Image (cartoon, rainbow, N blue to C red):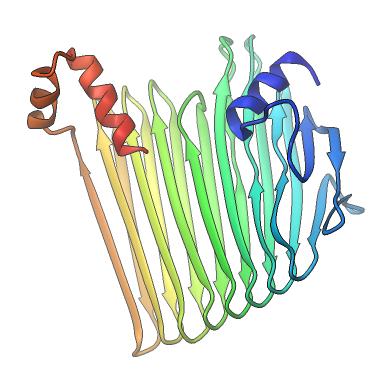
Amino acid sequence: MNQITKDLLREVSEWTGEFPGAYNIREDGASAGRRSTENISIETKADGPGLVIRVRPGTKGETVSIPALVTKGGIDDLVYNDFFIGEGADITIVAGCGVHTEDGSSSRHNGIHRFFLEKDAHVKYLEKHLGTGHGAGLRSIDPVTEIVLGEGALLEMDTSQLGGVDRSTRRTTAVAAAGAKLLVRERLLTQGTQEARTEFSVQLDGEDSGADIISRSVARGRSRQQYRSKIIGNARCSGHSECDAIIGEQGAVDAAPALIANHVDAALIHEAAIGKIAGEQLLKLRTLGLTEEEAEERIVAGFLK
């Protein structure tokens, strides 16, 4: 691994020189290190770039890390990763991604992740995105996440993009069987002329399935954000979508949550709020000795926490 890879690993996946459990480190389109465990196997896909990760039924308390890093301009990395989570397993997946460029060439990573959770499986999925470097080339990250939740399965998805990514499109789709749940927490910061688009589409097919999607974002400078969510209730189910955004300077946010109820007992709710930092919040912090800029940074950090 080169030094840029090591620096990005520390930022996006809390790497301390070693990963606990199973891992695969992807550096500029190739594997820079891999380890399977007795309960979690990581293999190279036979039909294209990417991995097949299999978790044995009943596996508890283990972690699999699959960070992907692009460390220079001129690379357009594409990878397909499939996760097969056995019945009753309870694990954490860390999928940080960083892109870096120091020249005028663009760098991009596109990770397509498919999750298949069997009955009563539980996955906590952590995904942190970051762009670094002083080059003029665009830094792009375009993740696609496809989720199939078996009966009683639970996937908790915590995703954040808090700096340096010039262009991003996040697409997440999910299908939930009876009693299955999807919980999503998204945090997003754009600045300058950065652009970001988020799309969620969740289909609740099983009785008592559910989804709770919460997005918090800040658009500063002249950055642009788009948020789209769609929850489709095809059975007795519950669904909630919430988009809260703060805009500053000439930032802009376009939010459009949608609900489709195809069953009389589908209980679906959406919320959307866009505004600026409240003046009384700034005043209160400034009376404590902070400058206006420091007060704004404190408010933004708390909002995105």
